[in-house]
Length: 113
Image: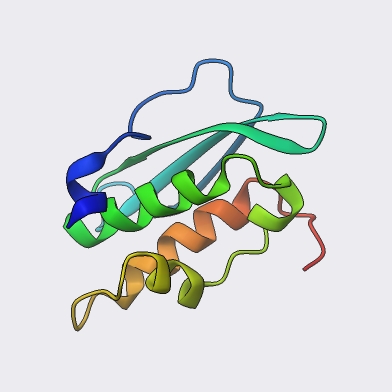
């Protein structure tokens, strides 16, 4: 709930250098993630989502964790990592962690994990 209420990383990142998204706009949860990467390290991360509180918390967790990390590591996130950062997701909401991880992986689709 803390991550859901925080939303510190929610919103636009006009000077983003990387973008990833997962889900289908208008067809359920949808997560977009923007990163500003300099010298291979994530300086800033922001998200937008159209989904439930679990999707919001997962997107916030990914962005909060990503800042200061090498972009190559961010592009290799697994859903179980995201689930751990948010302290678990409600039953039936596993797809939220999967979407957040998939959006992060999409920022660099050629990364070797």
